[in-house]
Amino acid sequence: MRKVAFFTALMFVLISSTAAFAGPAPQKVIDLANSQLAALGTDATVVKAVNTANSENKTLAQIQELDAQWKADKAAGKTAPYMTELMQNDAAKQLNTLMAQHSFITEIFVTDNQGANVAQTGGTGDYWQGDEAKFQKVFQKGILVSDVEQEDGKNISQVSIPVLDGQTHIGTMTIGVDVDQVP
Image 1 (cartoon, rainbow, N blue to C red):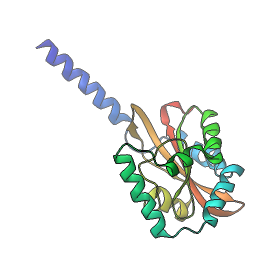
Image 2 (cartoon, rainbow, N blue to C red):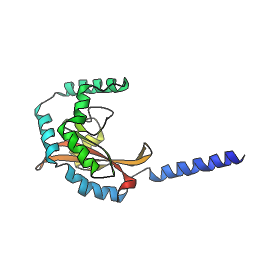
Image 3 (cartoon, rainbow, N blue to C red):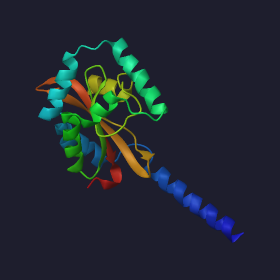
Image 4 (cartoon, rainbow, N blue to C red):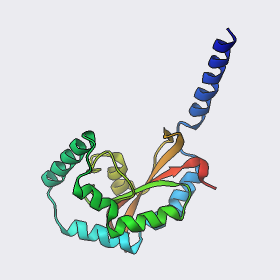
């Protein structure tokens, strides 16, 4: 009986702890998004990579074909060469440098003006982000801060910002933020 009571109490604490962090991002994450993180969207290496990707003029059909292959490869436990390239190109190296400078960043990925991945610090669920709010709303409204969700035992909010070449919005950057690590 004591084991059941202990287990019940433990589960209550775990569920209560998780629930306490679910929901809107804390103000400190919103403030961070509107200042320090927004500035990352103007990084010269990232801007160059996004401009290069945009100049390739991929059709939506080509992007969706790569997206389907990306998902199939991921489901099969494979990493296609183009996936590896996006994690090892110059922009990805710069993203890793930016991530290393901020202990609260868990991931970064960048898209072109159609939502196709350009560079990333790790694997993503898909190649094309163009059908997702983190892409669409950034192009419509600017910075987007998601609700906090549990990922790998961490309380994560995704912050999506415009990638800007001067005043021109050319792509997006999504940054995973461990809300418990934000000062």
